[in-house]
Length: 165
Image 1 (spheres, rainbow, N blue to C red):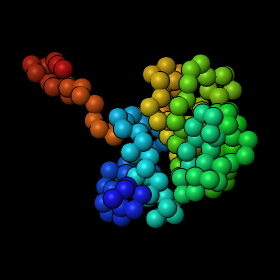
Image 2: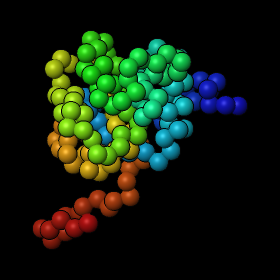
Image 3: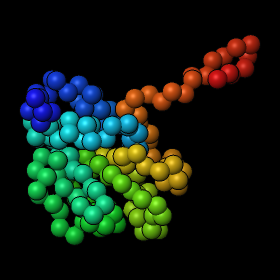
Image 4: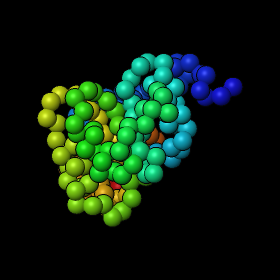
C-alpha cells in the first residue's frame, strides 16, 4: 500500500505538522526534519484530500501545487521570482521552500525578511525546509523555528540557583 492512497487519519504526523504551521505566530518558518520526502508525500495526500492550498518550490522545478504537481507556476524557477509571486498573491497558502542554497542574493534575503512581516492576518505561511544555519542567522527574529522531531538537546534545569544543561 503506497502512501498516496492512505486516508488522512493514517497520516497524523502531517496533520499535526500542518496544524503547527497554521497556528504559528508568524508567517515565516524554518522547519527541521529528518525525512523530507516522506513528509512531503504525506502533505501531498493531505492537500489532495482537504483542498488546502499547499505549494512546493524546488530549485530547478519552480513553484508547484502539492494537489496537482503538474500545475507549475510560470516564471518561478528562481527563488526570487517565486518569492515575488508569493508576495503578490492575495490568497492564503502554505508555501514550502526546499533546497534554498547559499549564497542568497540580497533581493532574495530582503524578500524573505518582508515575508516575515505579517501585513494582514493569515495571508500566507512560508516554510523553509531544512534551511542552512546561515540563512536562519541572517533572518534573525523574523523566522520561527519548528522541528518535526524534537532535537536531542538537553533541556536546561535549575539547580542551586543556576541553569544547567
